Length: 200
Image (cartoon, rainbow, N blue to C red; front, side):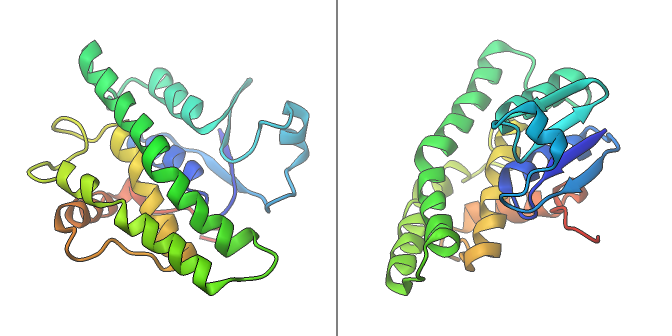
């Protein structure tokens, strides 16, 4: 089994956490931005980071990859058994996509993709991201996990955002967001959560 990914990609990090939690062995295949391997080119333009090759099955789009991993390997469960719990996890993921990812994306755009680095705009993007963390901090007050009493795809979806923000732009969760920081540290302490890196 192979997982094709860009180094540091938070979407691929989600997939690696899920595979590690399921204790599934896989080979990470790193590629550079703008230089997709021929295997991915053959699948079409949507086969980016992450793309999972599981035998004859090829899966791409990060959320679809997560759902495939959950469907393919039943233990440990990363979605609750009850419909209401599963909906709660999916709604949490939708919140991440709707409320946090655009602000994270603006940091990435300003740091990595602008032809000329504008420190003022970067600082504004960082501030907007950090300012958006208050409701997430409140969510984790009295909670060990994002949804329920064990790790789910909700945690898997949110955690890599903070790893990538720190790596790309040095953005950390402020100390006053102690509940969110404590959750981040708990997830980060899990062996499954270690980001994949080329050459180690």
